[in-house]
Image (cartoon, rainbow, N blue to C red; front, side, top):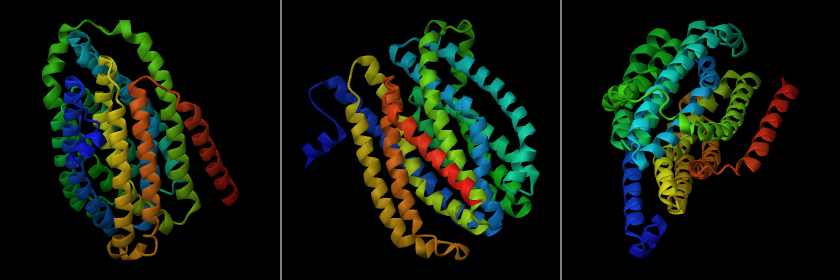
Length: 402
């Protein structure tokens, strides 16, 4: 039995250093995973009961498209954050403290400048978007962009914690953010409706931002000693890495935007609202995959730098997410009919189906995470055409059914 468990986790006694790295990897993975799932439970209560109680169906259906707009505007920050994490992990493993501090400081400054540009662009586009998405509260549109951009800045510091393996800080921030969001929603939704929702949504990134700054402030202070662009010698490799990563980010953003806009514009308020609630449950598989990827990425980079294979990391977490997703789909199929709000009874059966889809996406995402950590981008040769075809097909469906 123990031999099977060791083989499943990839723990081999052949190399002591590699074995110690694998044990550390799984210890951090389990700790972060448990903490984030507790936070997910609190968020599920918020999404299932608090939000439907205080928001009408028309407003609920607009939530995902509005957040998708912010996600698109923050796309450059997301690409930069991944490149930043990769390079920071490399410096941490090799012990290059000067370039590590310099990159951290310069990345924060570049992100702040990008935020200012994104806010200006959002202000220009928002009137048109509110009309397209049938959003009556224009303030809610601006708040959604503000929330998304604040949330997009947090991953930059979150990535630093990830690269430096401060997983305890990540777990602490998540555990604090979820109940604060719940409390904020309880007070703000009855007062401000859709606008209150996006104000409440801003609490988690602000909490995570605070935790990140507390942990990283000593490093940021020491970064004054590092020369400007101390990492300039690695700029060429970082630019090459960013060019490949941006392709994956862009096609994923296009597919997500088209899907949410089609659902909002083609379907009724009731159905689009039901999709929002159902997707909150199916996305649990995505959240599980993300928490596993948070730990996988820096450890896969260390394996690359030290000449180890990260196959044991990758296969272990992929098997884990597939097993968890399957169990979750079964649980949702049997329990969700008793949990859904009355207005959305009849749609709950789709949760199991969507969960299986998101589980497969999460598993493939873990494979992509490991590949990007090793600077392998061959997956783009099949991911790019498939995703682009699906996006075009879905957009064509919108054109023929409006």
